[in-house]
Image (tube, rainbow, N blue to C red; front, top):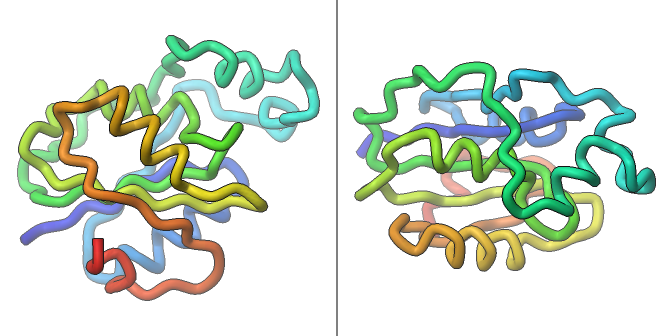
Length: 150
């Protein structure tokens, strides 16, 4: 079974976890076409880019690239920071940009204080045709086998 670790990270925290998980697996960074700045992700500012996106359930930030060949993978692990108790809208863009039918999707997230359960529920509800098997909050050091229990 082949696994891809796909991740979105602004501060580098989720990227670090993704690299630890990828030990021997392929790694794909989910990059926005327009990079997020620190001001963009200021959740205290209702006019920040991330606040505006997260308040719009239809927001789909554009990806820098959608040419990755995911056909060779059985399992896609999708990582992201928790924003507003759920996945950033760019994760929706990623899930909608690729044919993930029949693939096992495992979510992982990093967060300064929120859990992953709302993100898992939201993404399962929004994408009932995808096989989202579960998710785990991964703050701190991880080993590549940590997601195998899902």
